[in-house]
Length: 327
Ligand code: PBG
Image (cartoon, rainbow, N blue to C red):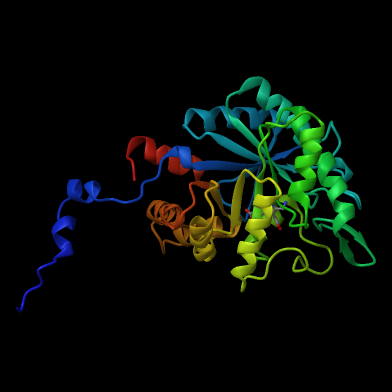
């Protein structure tokens, strides 16, 4: 029999046929938009290494939240850029810190947008590490106390969800305990469960001015070579009470997302990080890639791998496109 009986091209012939058999689709509901908030009034500072993204003062952040909501995106995640940093990152757990004030302002104006906060001290420490440092070592258990207070002050300011991104051991349990004691038993935790020591965070560190002043983050973030260990991190965070688990970065770690999807029934989030965003932007600016197609294909691949939630700097652009023409 010289000809194939099964011809997969039969169902590829026309656009409506392709739509009928499409297995994965994107909607604005899939996205969380990451934003950077800074001191001042009417301040919008473009981030050079992340074309299209800016650091915003609180008043402009509120406007941004309105736009995000109008685009049908359910949530934003907030990163604070303080003007005061110290050894312990204390401006990060000040009830009147930049993020805490931003939460109050956004919740007052746009109450039904889900407001998530990043819980990690690196944006607030003078040395740029995600933990308390003594004699060049990052101390685990001492850091947990800072994270507890930080998460509690975010909750008290009105955050809808907290997202610890520090990779200290035991932090999900510590934060759960602190939130419960403070009466926030219903506040969910989205744990950056498998966060790798990746070079793709470089533009973010530029944006947040949070590059470590000595050494690197390999003693707490994961080795990119390790998959079994990522699953152990995920198992532990679930045991400790995480409500959503996250894999970060996204596209270089699609196998981890896929393995996580097989292993747990929890919602899975993936963070398409700054470097993934900026690579596409830069290639598009050079005329080497079609930006829209690269954006949608990358987001679709992350969803296909098994993530139902995608943190992405493309959220607004993608939601705008999807509102007019679903992908
Ligand atoms: C830590 C944190 C980082 C990112 C999110 N939370 C930086 C880091 O670990 O160095 C990176 C996000 C990105 O690259 O877009 N607070």
